[in-house]
Length: 265
Image (cartoon, rainbow, N blue to C red):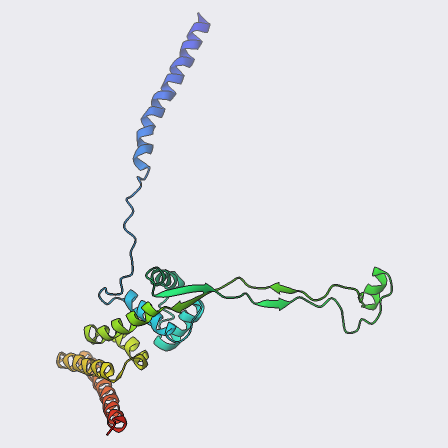
């Protein structure tokens, strides 16, 4: 009888464990994250409205209009030319390069790895061998029959990015379109100015006229204020805009003089 009671107690305990386990299962099921539907991968459309990413794409194409570059060189030159190195991380640079590559604007090749000579097996002071390893070590000499110097690969292959014909034509087309569409964008202005050497005289005139017009419009919108601090700031802003307009007008006059002097008679 006692044995039967013990068996029943163990069975009840076992059933209690199962019941508790079944109660816990729905809780685990609720916290298991369901797989979210993957959003469509973003494809860089060079015709999209102006954004920071588009500015980065145009700037990369502009840099590659000069020479093929490594990723590190692109980021470095973005900083030197446009002041963007601090804002451009490799996490945003390389995805943009990949998007440009997928659209056929750039192509990639692998550069040859750097070769470095391994340390020479023979020393200039080594003119003889003692005939034993311990003797050679003691006298600092090495066997004249040691192996010749070998070339070893010290670095991995690097990707070199080169602009394609499609990339060149697209860069020029979209850069000129940006002169009109984003004349009042200060970030765009820096890129426009940096790559102005790829524009002809007519395109340069469009760039200058549109930017001057946008700045004059901005100048007219500067409010007046009785607040002393705001008044000082508005004066600084007004002076900055007026100086930029004067700079662009000088460029325009210089362009007109060059066109007149080079025009055939």
